[in-house]
Length: 453
Image (cartoon, rainbow, N blue to C red; front, side):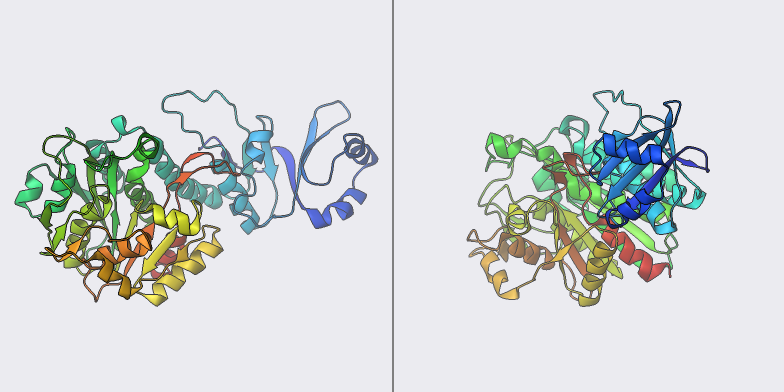
């Protein structure tokens, strides 16, 4: 990433032109450039490379209808030759250009080497370069974690990732592993993960001044979800390496918070498991007593994410954080409601919810608030336990899942729950098919506004 952005003023001039201003710009250009654009039948939209009299590249122009998009240069970085290009623009445009330039060049290359040589964007602001590299590294970290196959991204690997993050930023990490989860009263995390050869664990990172406002992040870390004994069909299992996407999101968000040195007391809880099938796998109809003391009947072993989250949320509540936020690839119902590219979230705090929504619109990372419709909580009732781990019917599944989680959060805590896809099904500028970060830039913008100003 560091080779994609350079600080300075030297490079082939790159001109960003609003489509509505193109004709006016063209009138001021030398005749040879006007003739070149005419002879190449340039449409007045997109990229054109303008030659000098000796045939070398004199300048590049990029004409767009959306010069204020966060994905402004998401395709351009893949279209230009591998030369340094200098962009002279206002501060906001430079931020947008740098952000989209770096993420437009993102490739997951752990297993297949990326031979492409990329151009460099040169801008006259070391501060923007540094800020962009922090932000884009957070997004790329989420993408890398989600894209990594399950064999190389099991609970122990998530633990190693968080240990590395702690070492980088001077944080502390503890891990409760295997049967120790039972000894320390995290029964549902243990239950979901016990059938795997990869031991389940609760990974707990803390960072920052202990007297600062407490912000706690919880991320669903189901490293692979077979569905358990309620086995998924093959097509439904194919992308289940991404079921730890919630953990990836809070790790990426934590990186951003720590790198920006936000004045908060950060805690990150990741219940990490593999939902596997073995002789000791948990069963439909089993009843578990959770950390909070509520009993839960297992209606379906494929509704395991809310089981690992409920113990982590109960633990988080004990510390009474000022903000408690969880991320999870929790329900297909949310994808049906909002599609794959718009993450839904639930919140018991109107002010915080409005802040997330405003932040998402500001940084082009939109999020959509969904209702915690309390009458639907009755759908999670059980005849033999306090509640069931999924609703009795197929409707409103994202809402009933959120209401289930809410039962494990103390009522006096500001809590928000993000139900994300964590995956791009189609390629868009700056957003290739594969793992994706949804909502973390929106949340970070809110946190920055609230705690850093």
